[in-house]
Length: 234
Image (spheres, helix red, strand yellow):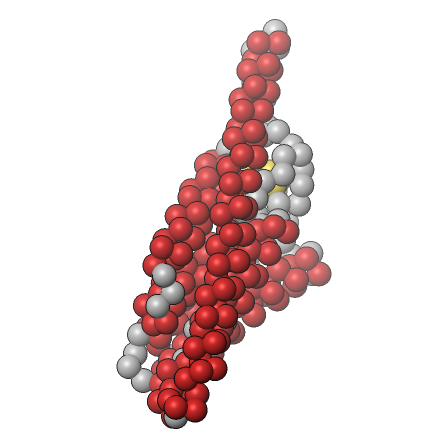
């Protein structure tokens, strides 16, 4: 199988109680904190919200690196890590649409794709296949974080300081954030389409394999092993 598609590790000796998984859980827990701070009518709270988002985004870089370096990759981490990523980015886009007028249709399209892929991942999991992010999925997440990193800066703070002097470059930075969000949207939709296509192929191949095993085995034993080697997008 490819790195992002594997069977559930029923007999894995790696404990889920490790630092990489702790960072993943911390990122997930930070999401409601980020939202609450962002919605406060205070520049200090909104700056704090941006800091929480930035720190949570940084943990996404370190948890995966540490898990690979320390050989602490677990199914828990591979499943929860993309969920934490999606929770952080989807809430980030919703906040950006609310505070800096990022078009809501951008946020909705990204949300539909992300939630749909999460549902498909759950279907694969029930079949004993764990799907984690591959390189295209990671690039998509990186671009989403870059766009949100620009958009979630409390730009209104600089306008409140001196609107005449700061308005031109603040508007430019917000538009730059919108442009990054457009690139992130394109990558998000592209990777989602590829994921669906490859996912359908995997499902059909698995069903065909099970059917062949059932008809060709005199003892009536069925193969319950998912097809290996399919490359799917997360």
